[in-house]
Image 1 (tube, protein in one colour):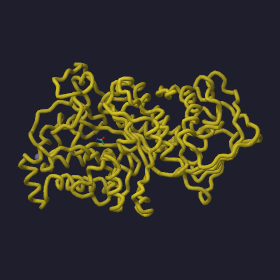
Image 2: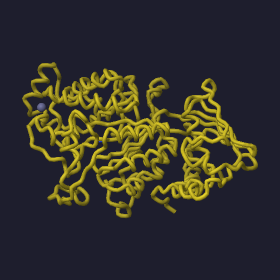
Image 3: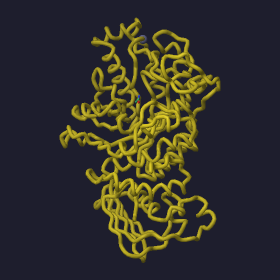
Image 4: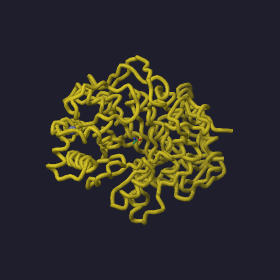
Length: 490
Ligand code: ACM
Ligand code: ZN
């Protein structure tokens, strides 16, 4: 059985095999001359490809270089799993491997097939970030959403404001154990932190680009900003002081919307981030911003009056619109979590729908682009069994592989025209309870394999039994690559 993940648009098996060298499959995008490659932009979409394996050789025709990359990824899934192990090509670079003869025609359903990694609740260094990108690209996903700032840590170097990482990248401890009830809380007292330099970020972006993955940075505002406020308490409503948070959950202290210095700092940050990341999107968060401080803040209330705003929701909307002008002026498109709909959407904003699908539906109806990422199907921080105690400590909610696989990103409520605004689908790995690379992989795979298929494979082609069988044949590839996934239920 030929078991590709995600499932291609069409696959016809032929008799026979071709033998390919280790070198030709070891590296993503490696050049070698046993594969004949032709680009046909008129015949195929940029990410589309045709792959033909005959006993005489291998031919790829692709709409663009991304299509060539995807065809090579397919090729890497056609060889025996052990061919993918770094040791096998290192030990014997002239070894060859059988590739079954096939004719494959393939292209993605959606243009945004993403995974988000939160490097704030726990810090993950660039070596792991690259490995994560490698693994998502192996499943033909093409967006890496890098969640870089939070209450618990500021993880991106900003040259004009070294205090953001100097203060904001380190916390004195972390909540010990799960967050249940109302305390009292225990902390581990272990200093935790780290940040990524701009030079390292450039390196990650180049690594991702070789794999046709776009990196989307996220800078959280106006909420989830306590690490920044620890460095700049004067940018809060109360003046602080604050610590870089050791706790999870929604924090009341947020950027003051009445203080113009807030926009001065954020403009500096956005200016550097926009200069660093070549992709079209800049994510500004926008989720879970309590309005308690704004309600009691004279500056915020003065802003509501001077701008003629109805209430604090409208103030958040005003905040996001002001930020959108800064983002757009640097040639970038603003993305935000679905709370940015409250009080009215900024004119050009893209919405990431996480509290269910309603935000995505509403935004698409208003003519805005959306990425679907509802907690019900896309939250990889949820446990992987209904029996919560069988799984490592995590959020007290579960999301089974089968449930992820059942996800249909296109809401049936939308007209075809509105549906055109659905860019795609994304899985999110929040890391409150994920503190090692091993755990991050365990939570991500194989559930993200199911999301990859929801984003790539044709509507109506999904079949749980077929996927389950393909996955059983696919997981040995992850073993060979050293990816520590969760085993399938028997
Ligand atoms: C989110 O999960 N707060 C976007
Ligand atoms: Zn305020």
